[in-house]
Image 1 (cartoon, helix red, strand yellow):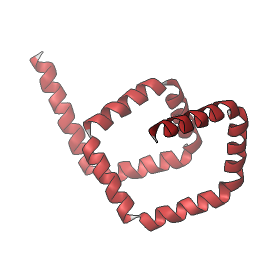
Image 2 (cartoon, helix red, strand yellow):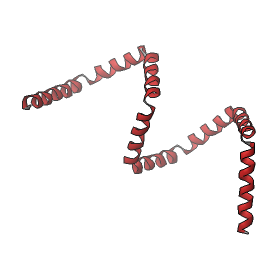
Image 3 (cartoon, helix red, strand yellow):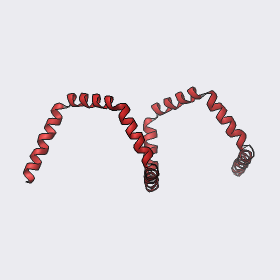
Image 4 (cartoon, rainbow, N blue to C red):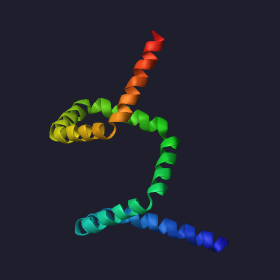
Length: 131
C-alpha cells in the first residue's frame, strides 16, 4: 500500500515536471488537434450533453450553490464593464428577430387565449376587491 502511494506521488511529480518543461508544445498540439477534429469534438460534446443532461444540471446546481456570491459579483462586474456592448447586442438581436418574436407571440396568444383571459379576469377581480 505504501509503495503504491509512493509510486503515485512519483508519477504525479513526473507529470507535473513534464508539463512544465513541454507546456508550449503540448498547447500547440492541443490546438492542432482541435483544428483538425473540430466537427468530431463538437459532435462528441453534443452527444455527451444530450446523454448526461441530469448529471450536468446537478453539477451546475452544486457549483452555483457553492460559488453563488462570487458568481453574482462577477456577473454584476461584467455587466457594468460591458453595458454598452450588451445594449448594442440586444438591439441588434431584437432587430434581427423582430418578426420571429411577433410570430411566436401571436402563436402563443392563439394557443393560450382562454387561459390568458381567465388570468386577466382574476387579476381585475383581485384589484377590485382591494379598492
